[in-house]
Image 1 (cartoon, rainbow, N blue to C red):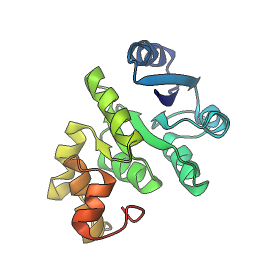
Image 2 (image 1 turned 180 degrees about the vertical axis):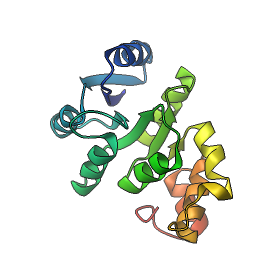
Image 3 (image 1 turned 90 degrees about the horizontal axis):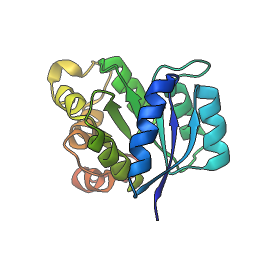
Image 4 (image 1 turned 60 degrees about the horizontal axis):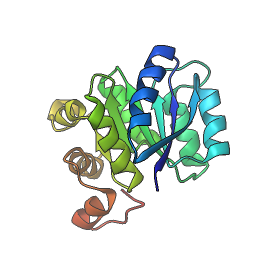
Length: 175
């Protein structure tokens, strides 16, 4: 069965390109598109996709806020942040809000498919450029705990939530 996905981006051309790519992937079924965060939130509640691809900066509600709403509502939707911005504050804000993936719009198209597949199976996915930055000590702010850093580094190396939990002797929910 195909992984159900909604896409939210305020740029029509970006949405059209992503739609065209996603529709070619037999493992993915695009079930909705939104042009702002409020529409994305409504679609998430109504359509209950397995994965939501959210642009970080959108009108009405940004992607981080929508992600936080998904987490607070305890919805079984894996959020992937899709953005042009790799600044550490965006990455950390996204992950803290509950995003399971972070991918740059400059990534090759097949990386988007891998991200969707990974998060739909309960894993964490970081764009390779972002993962390299996560491994850099200068990337981590003082406010992140050593345990959060361990989790983030393992996720950046491609470990699933289950594998991170097993390695750190914590629950998947904690991860």
